[in-house]
Amino acid sequence: MKNSTIYAAILTVFLIIGFYSCSGVSSNSPSKAVISLYEKMKNKDFEKVAKMYVTKEGKQLSEDEAKKIEGLLGMGSKEYEKKGGLDNITIDEEKINDDGTSAKVDFTVHYKNGDTDKEHVSLIKVNGDWLFQITNF
Image (cartoon, rainbow, N blue to C red; front, top):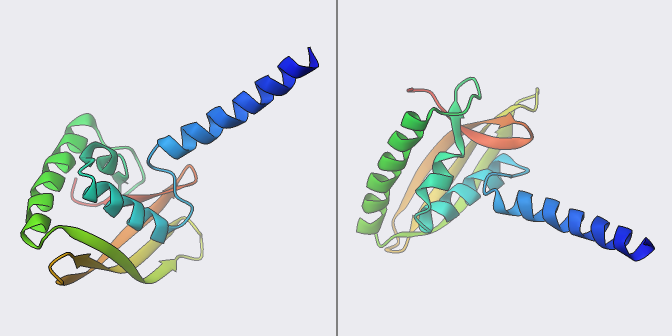
């Protein structure tokens, strides 16, 4: 009986860890969220990338909005491929607002052909995760 309780506790811990590590969204800093997003872009996992976006108010995108984002990501990916594909991301600056619920990250996108682009994004913390704000929807 004691062994089955221990095994149940261990199984529960592994399931919780597995859930959070496989969700593809969890990040404990705005900079890590940016890096995670671009890793997913490199893997062309546009559905997971789209789940990292929310409205300006922090609300989940509708299914139609998420599909639009996926389409835009696909088009963006083709542009990245013209530069040899994504190589890596370097974080230039991370600014978390005093309230701890919003942030801005300045970063540099490095392409495999040696080109770079300076970028910046706004993020909002929703249920403990840093997500990317979309303002045009």
